[in-house]
Amino acid sequence: MNIEIQFIHAVQNDTLESQVTTKLEALSKRYDWITNAAVFFKTEKHPNEENYVCEIRLSVPGPQIFASSNEVNFNKAINTTIQQISVQLEKQKAKMLAH
View 1 (cartoon, rainbow, N blue to C red):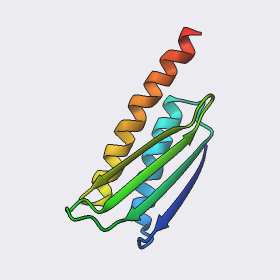
View 2: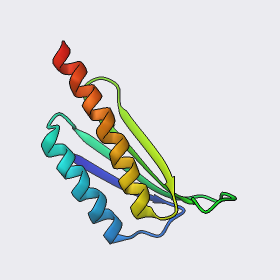
View 3: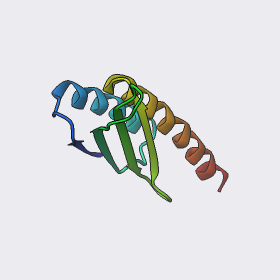
View 4: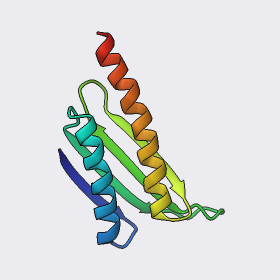
């Protein structure tokens, strides 16, 4: 699986890159049909404290899988987004097995 990571209005951080890479590689081992992952880290200005955004887009057979979350820091945003991606991958796997 190819992983592309971009920081938009955020400072590049090797720790965040390794954290998200580790989690995506674990998903890739479980779902070997994931071909590509694009990860975007953004900081946005919101009136509340949730300014850190993590977006993940996965290329899989069928429609792409996308998840995004706003949290108080990037670590929580990564965890929330990975959880959302996992749910969508399970649904996609169930559809693939049904056909």
